[in-house]
Length: 76
Image 1 (cartoon, rainbow, N blue to C red):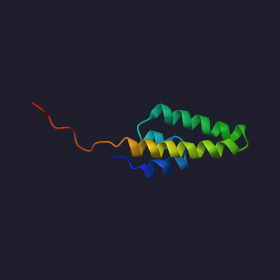
Image 2 (image 1 turned 135 degrees about the vertical axis):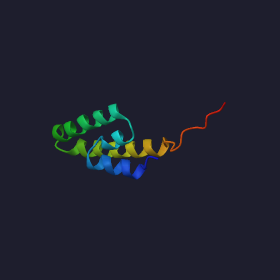
Image 3 (image 1 turned 90 degrees about the vertical axis):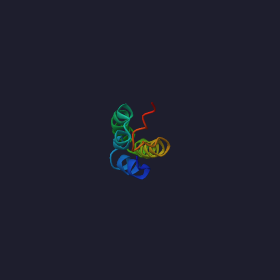
Image 4 (image 1 turned 180 degrees about the vertical axis):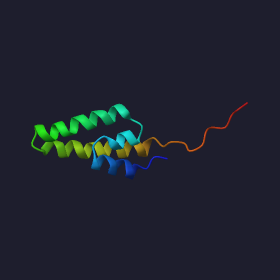
């Protein structure tokens, strides 16, 4: 199962890594490119905001989309 706390911490360390952990590769790439660009472009102000939004979205996705550990039973 996905751990929402781990997803949030991973995105706090490096924006987008929490999305990679959740299996959302395109979203992870977007956050990985967008957040550092905003850090540089706004002198840090928008960078902090988007950094926190990245962690929050990773957390909520992991919380709302749990993964099954076992395969479903074969129904014949």
